[in-house]
Amino acid sequence: MAKGPGKPLLALTWPDIMPIMSDQILGPPTAAADVTVGEGVPRPRLQIVPVKGLPIVGVVLLGLVWSIATNSRWGLDFYHVAGGALWTGIDLFVGLVIGPILGRLSLPSRAEFAAKFMPMMVIIMPTLVIMTLASGFQLAVEIGNMAPASPNHAWLVASYVVVGVMATIALGILEPANIAVLFEMRRPHPDGAIIGRLMRRFVYTAGVTGLMQVATLVIMTRVATQ
Amino acid sequence: MTNGQLRTSSEISALRFPPVAELGTLSLALVITGGIVMVSTMYPSPTLALPVALLVVSAALLITNIVLMSRVKVFNWQTFSLVGRWALLSYAISAGMIEFAFLHNHVGGSALVVLTLMLMMFMLNVPLIIGFTAARYQTRI
Image (cartoon, rainbow over the protein chains, first blue to last red):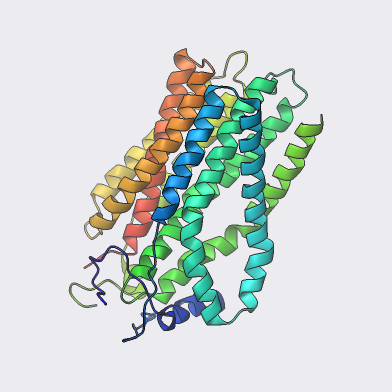
């Protein structure tokens, strides 16, 4: 199997990934952490962007444009509620449930999960975010919550701040790290120290993101019942 | 380190890269803050002074970033270009969706100009941060 850097999609054997993941989860990076590639073992392919998912994203976005263009109340509600619920739910579920469980799994299991999970997140989360925000803005205009006199206006401003914090963390810190990790894992000789360093960003920001998501739940349930 | 090989983590640590990702994130945070101020005061008429000031500082940071990157001697421009191009396409679509929502709601005049410029900053900053972060760890000798 070709291992050259020019190959567009490079896959790793689990024996290759295990040391990387053990570095990132269990211990501090070491200076010489390049791992070697095993020979003669079937290598599952690692895609940075799951291409098969893109048509689904396209259909979802077209539906969103249609909902906004026609001011469809059902469409806007669907996109905002479904998108927001999935966004918040996935964030909290991954942070509070999946994360701790992963920490107790064997290293090969962690590695296998991460190699399949992270590329999926590359397309799922941005799609959910744009679904939720675009439909939410339109919904707020339609309902009248954007007006300063609305009892929900202050809550909406609070939600903007919450989303602003989450967007800055996601776009400026987490997504670059996610992409960089996937690029590193495609290498013939992935560097466990680099992956470990990048993955720490997820640990450092998990508390803030979790707090912001809980705040979102409080704000949105408040807005919906006023 | 071996000629033609990717650097190890210690060698990458030894390389001095300008704080492009940090400045880009700050620039992004400024336009997001400006956007929050504008949308919060959208009706009946949005506040422009603070958002414009934030936009100017954000643009200055972006220009600083471009200058800093142009001075980097050892850098994996191929990875930067590959990641940056696709990220730019992705975030152009996102920015286009947001712009569409503003246009659909009859936002116009100077407010639309400021919002559009902010979206452009968003559209440029995110691919720059992602591309730079991916490329700095893939830098060849």
